[in-house]
Length: 159
Image (cartoon, rainbow, N blue to C red; front, side, top):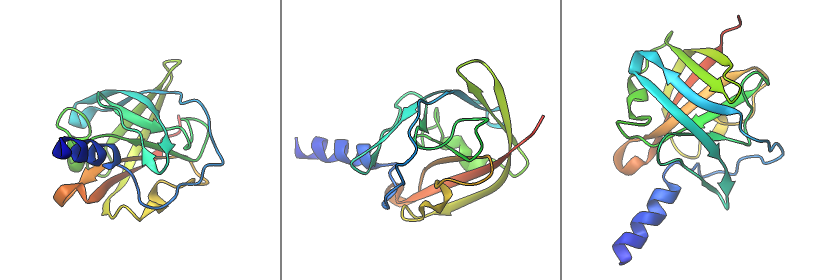
């Protein structure tokens, strides 16, 4: 029983960052899907919240941090998911220049181009903090015992 309880606590905290995220912005998530054609990723996106320092995580797709921006609103859009083959595991192989598409709940497409990938520690929250320009930040866990975060930064492609 102890092992199961420990595993559940570990799973709940697996994608959390260790520093506090600013909470002044809170809104309904408008992100419905994330698509990365080059990796054959097409996932539903659920609302993601931070409660008592723990980032909620979708078990069947990706999560959009509701404290981050929505597509088209400018700023940093944070979408994250488990490092599983059927979720965000393949983002470890995304390359600079590749396209990522977000679909909102009104079926509007927003396109982004990968400009950077990086492995960081859970205390490096600058990648998920608010920004002045519209960017998309994807992340998942990586490293021994999921001790690191793999970050993908993509710039908005204006029509």
